[in-house]
Image: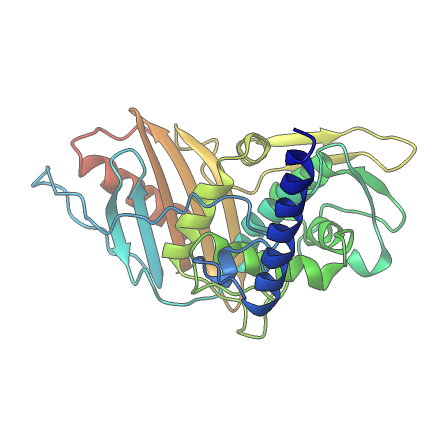
Length: 315
C-alpha cells in the first residue's frame, strides 16, 4: 500500500509535466470566431444570438394597401410570429442620430450597477439635446439613464462614457464589440450620443431591430423608455431635474411602450417604436424620414390590418 501512493504521485506529476510541455508546443484554436471569444471581446455576455426571420407575413386583408413613406429605410417586425410586416431598404447603411443611445444604454446596463454614482466633467457638457447637467454634479446611473432616454441627453451619454473603465474611447470600443456579439456587422459607432457629422457612424434598420430586441431584455431599460415624465429630486449632489420623454407615440397610440427618437441634419428624422397590442409584440424602425410620427402610425396600422387586427383609435 505504501509503495502504491508514491507511484501514483509520480504518474500524476509526469502527466502534468507532459501536458504542460504539449501545451507550450501546440496552440489550441477556439471553434468560435474572435468576436465571440471573451478573451478577445470582453462584451461577450451571451451566446444566444438572435437573427430575425426573413419570412414576410402574408397579406390576410385584401383591402389593406402598403403605405408610401418618405423614410429612406424602414422595417416593421412582429416578434410574436417572427415575420416581417413591412420593409424598405432594410440593409442600407444610414446615419442613426440619437438611436445610438439604445446601444449606449446597453453598455451602461451591462457594465454599471443602477445605484452607481457618476460624476459630471466639463468635457461631458456637449451641445444639442441635454438633460441640463452641470460640472461637478454626481448622479446615480439610474437617473442618468432617464436623462439619456427621455430628453435624449447628450450630456448624460458623455457622462456614462467618460466614467467607463478606460474612459470614453473604451466605451465606444465596447459599443462596437457589443454589436459584433449580437451578430450585427453593418453598424459602426464613433461616439455615444449620435452627433455624427462625419458619416462614419451608421447602421441599418435590420441591425437596429436586433439591437432593440436585445435592449428590451433589460427591465430598467423597458421601464425608462416607457416613462412619459420623470423628476429627479434635488440633493446635495445635484439640482432638481424635470425630464419629459420625447418619444413620440407613448401617449397617442395605445399599446406603444417606447423606445427612442433621433434627429440630425445628416440622419433626418429617425424613430424606433415598440408596440404591444392584441397579444402581438411589434418593433417598428424608421430612418431618414420627413414625418416620422405620422409614418410610424401608418406603418403600425398597416401591420395590424395586415393580420386582420383592428388598430386602436389614436390621435
